[in-house]
Length: 286
Image (cartoon, rainbow, N blue to C red; front, side, top):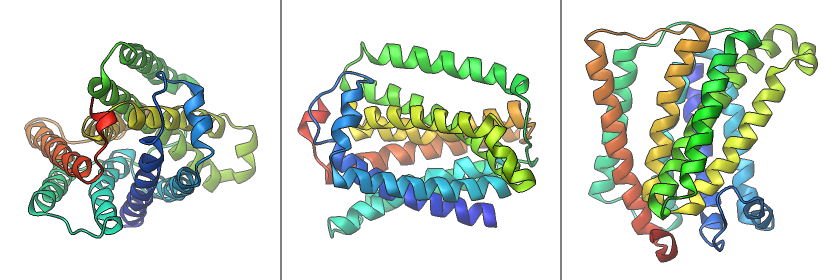
């Protein structure tokens, strides 16, 4: 329950960060993909800095959740960030959620419940040696490089979706280091200074953060948010299996697990459409 509660609190904090950072990012003029000037310009915006504070709070809750539960359990729960984002936007705009938004929220929730109930992730995970994580790191870097390179040649919507997928994978990979860092802290806190995992966590987290800002800035929310929402838990399950030896049900259960992911994707798309209607931005819809 500690893992579940803290994961949901992390989702709420991330939702607040998303609302604040999106408000700042959408008002920025066009920047090239991965241009450092975007972050420099955003640093001058108090609302964006408030979003960074909320993101840090989400990181703390996520770290506690990962110290108590499996990667394949905690990361999918972060999908609830999107419904929480919708609720926060409706509160800020002082307009209630319409029936379509409630339906979408129900679909995301049902998809998440279906996936977690049928996958039934098992295993606690552990600190792993660099050699054990090296293959996953190599594949991750290669995939992210391809996605970022492809995004440079795409129009707004597909570029936002591509960078959203890259950010989701990056955050999932960062979570593997968060889990190891929290495990080290519980065992021997002073050892963190000389261990590689905390530094890898910071590096991967910063890279993922930059990818997220460019995904939110590059194109319509309808393209970026569902891609980010779904790629993170899917990648996290794969990382949990390949790095930490976590297990999920296979065989016929895979059909229901895929059905859960499809419900999450469809519900996320509907929610992103609702968010786009509440936060119109003609420049980013091109």
